[in-house]
Image (cartoon, rainbow, N blue to C red; front, side, top):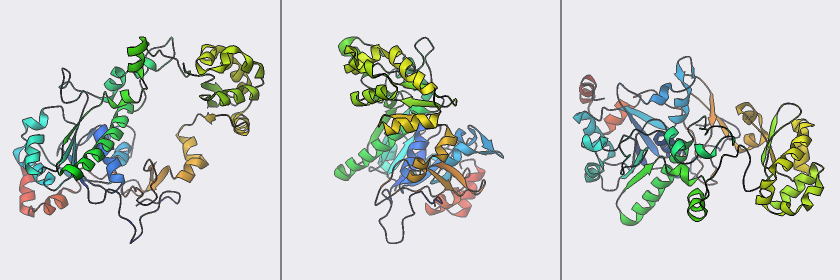
Length: 410
């Protein structure tokens, strides 16, 4: 249960059930798109059962900073999930998966294409067990094509999608993001695709396979680069913090050393900014009337805005822009986020009890629903913590569970 005063309240007794209450999801995924996708589903009430190898748990448990030997990323990524162990390459472990999916709605996996088929638990076999099962398959390059069996990670997608080529300073190298951008975008796409497949199942009565290549969702977020090239031969260049669609659009350093970002996508905002910084004569220039014209004269506009900003502390800059109804934002790091009253009002960060760490703050569910809000009910659980409980619910006896554990199948 969430414990932040500003977070969405728990559903009270007698209120509407969670949006995905009654939906059972089996997760066979690691690092990071699949686990994040199932976390999004679990946030809104889906019962998520995460299956990990008995001896090789999800690497995210040890990824990134840790406190007292406890991995922090896993506490976020594993939220709202029950954890079980099964060696799926072992026939006994594969049989447990068949039993798990018999009454499941969704399976999310990110093995290299062909792996589940080799173990006898590919989509064809699983649909024999449960024809209503939605199977979301996440891989670097998709289930078909010449690269299908290559190992694929988000970094490769960020490189091959056009993102890195368009990111960075004009005279600098292509730049990769310092976090799992492609994986995160794929996670959102996966959750969306799963919901579409579940809706289709309402109509057809049968499940289907969803093929997600990590190289594709991030490309969909990069704008009409393919259409630009197809129609104009235009290739998006690296522009740093500038835009080729409007100006001024950049980051500017204030007198106190802090930075702000300014955007002038709308013509009216651009005019307000130039009046604010004391350069109204630029508005009368013939090139100022279009975003592309302003972008072509970004040096002039950046000099005007930058000089004005550099003479003032960040609080004064933000206050003046707000009074002028011009678009500005301070450049935040996580310390600023946690102190900001807007994020507090939205309940963006929430404190969740954890048996290892006590209260742990993390990002809350990414949007609010008036009737069926999401909840972070608990943090990521220990490796295999729920194995006995889940297998008992499948009908296995304590003796059978002990035998499977002794054989290394769980």
